[in-house]
Each structure stands twice: as C-alpha cells, then as structure tokens.
Length: 480
Image 1 (tube, helix red, strand yellow):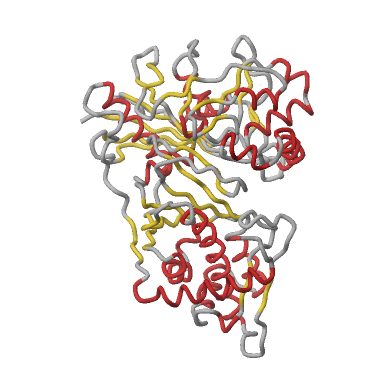
Image 2 (cartoon, helix red, strand yellow):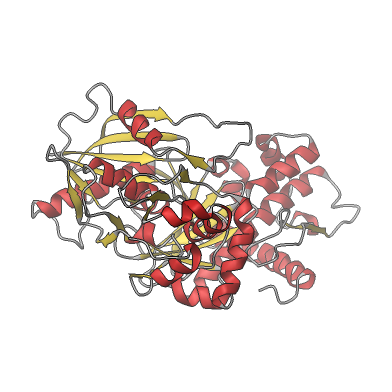
C-alpha cells in the first residue's frame, strides 16, 4: 500500500485528496479558497498565479501530505501563464472565458482561412476563452507585454513546474495541450506556427509527456505526475471507458465521450480533445442547458424542484408543446443569433405542467442532438454519466434515459477531478516502480452510481425526439 495525492486548482478553490494507491480510498482531504473577485462581475479574467501557490500551501497545512509518495496536478483550463526569459510572470495569468476576446477569435479564424482550416489543423475552432485567442487578444491590446513573452504555460503546467523547483525542463500532457488551440490531437504535436499567428512571435512550449510519465521529482524526492486539465481529470476520476459518455448540465451543456481516435470536424461542432489515458475525448457543447429550466421556472413562479414536479404531471410530448431551447443563441446547431421557439400552442396545451414538461424535453433533446453528433461519427455510447446539480431533479432522471436512448448513471457526489489527479499520480508511481505499464492505469473502485435504464420507454423517447426534430428542422432548415 502506498499513498498519493491529487491536487485540483480550479477557478475558485484548491482542493487536495490523499488516497490509497491500490483502491483509491480517500484518506485525507484539504481545501482553500482563492482570492475573492476584485469586483461584483461574477467572472475572473486574470489572477496572480502566486495566489495558487498560497492556496496550495493552505490546503496542505497540518501535515496533509505526510507520507505521500506522488502528486498529480489538475487545474482550470482556458488559462495562460506568460513568462519572460527569466521565468518570471510578464503579467497576471489570463484565465476564464472573457467575452472581450470574441473579436480576437474572429480575427484568428479569418487569418487561417476559416473554420474548416482550423478544425483540420488542430481539431477545434478559436473561440473566446481558448489560450490561442487569449494570446491574440494580448498582442492586440497589450503589445508591450506580448513582446516580453518568452514561454507560455497553462495553469497545471505552471503549478507542476513550481512544485518541481522551476527546472529547465517544463512539461504538460496531451489532454491540457489539446485545449490550447495550437496542439493537434490528431498528430500529437504542437503547431508553433499557429501560436506565432496569435502572438506575433515564437515562444518556448512545454514538452508533452505521456499519461503514465513523471514530470520529475521535487527537491525532497516526491514524484510529480504529468498532470492534466480539469475535464480530463474528471473523466479519469470517473473511470470512463470506450462506450461511456458524459453529459454535463450547467447553465450551458456539454457532451463528451471516450474514443479511440481524434475526430476532425470541418464545421467545428466537435472539439477534438485528448484524454488523460492516451485515448481521445471529443466534446460537443450546447449554449443552453439549465438556463432553460431556470428561465421557465421564473416564468411559472417556481423553483427548479417545483418545475420538475410540475413537468411530471404532464405526459410525454407535452400535449404537442415543443420548446427549441436556443435562448442565448446556440452552438449545436450553429445558430449564434437565434432565439428560443415555443410551438404547438393549443387550448389544451396551454397549461403550466405542459410548458414545464416542454422545457425539460427541449433541454434534453438539445443535448441528445449533441450526443447524436458524436454517434454519427462512430462514437459508441452505451452509458451516459449525467453530471451537475440538475441531474438530481426527478424530471431529468425520468426523461433522460429514453431521450438519450442509453443507460444513464448519476454518480454519487464526489470531487472526481481531484480523484482523477490522484489516480494519475498512482499510475506514474506504479510505472516508476515497475508495477504498472504505460497502458495499465490503476484499477480503482468504480464510483457509486444510481443506474437508470430506459426500459420500455425507448419508443416514447424516440417519438418525443421526432416531434422535436420536426419543429427544429422546420424552424431552422439545414441547421443539421
């Protein structure tokens, strides 16, 4: 038996779990908050990266890491730490989805010749928040700072480098590299020409190491694994395998699945990411998910629990009421300037319970559309892990299996991102000691899940999907 730790530096907290290397059982935990936002904007766009180290020290206080043999680091994605020739930060780290970067994203798309050119080059299309776009925005708005940049790291890369004592060698992993916009999951290589297109000059990039590789050892002899981004760490913590998909229910939604190869999508609908195991993690995002439920709940004077109860008083198909949930425009399908649509209004359908039902069906059908994008590209989906607080709503659990056409699993609440980082640390430790191979991650206990089978409701789910698709295609012909 050994002991390893997983560290996750998210946008708001640093969390640490200490786990048994053989089973993944959690032995100890710690956490610390990051500095509060400087104003009431609700979004952070930059932060001094030293704050992450201070939070790490606070989270690890009281001997939390005593006996630990290896650490894995995961961290927030969509961030860049900009270093000068001495290894010091040029300015505070750029983090988060900053909508001021939209112009820079459009500039980059045009500079390379369009969305298809980007999708073929790196498996994704520039959009606000992505590191490549942050560099373009920096070059346009802070040219003096841009000229000082000699190296670019992401948050997990920078934390790993700091833990190792700032060695000459800097590393990252496939997963986090694939989210930059200048690394190709298909070829497994950097595209420095695209980074130069964004920033205006070449810079040093970290070495991309394998999933079971060690980034190095601390001066005290503690092994540090490759680390990864939060999305990949969460998938690894859940123990996903080919055939598993994850549907995340936030204000917006995302659908991802483990796949054996990178998917190049000329439309840019699929973002081709790598995972933390050597496989791939294609992602399709929707602009609207739980915001649809919240908007409908406000309209009907209910909270989400009340909306769920109301929806279950209706019947499949909501008496013909169909809500296309494109309230904030939509990404899947690509309809950035549209709005939501409510159709099927008849005297018998104009009741609160039918509108509530249409909201749940519309949100889940929108996510089922995203799931279908992956299925049509050969991605197998046998099980769907449903994440987010809205996954606990009875209406979501009652409708999702039939609408997704698959078994749905609701994992018990746990910090799967931090657990994934710890599991990676156990893998690197086992590989270093010769107990594991680079193709054999540790077999930790599967998460406790509530399992929901579609059973005999699949035909009902298909009928609701067909009703939804007919309205979608009539309202937005050619969108799919």
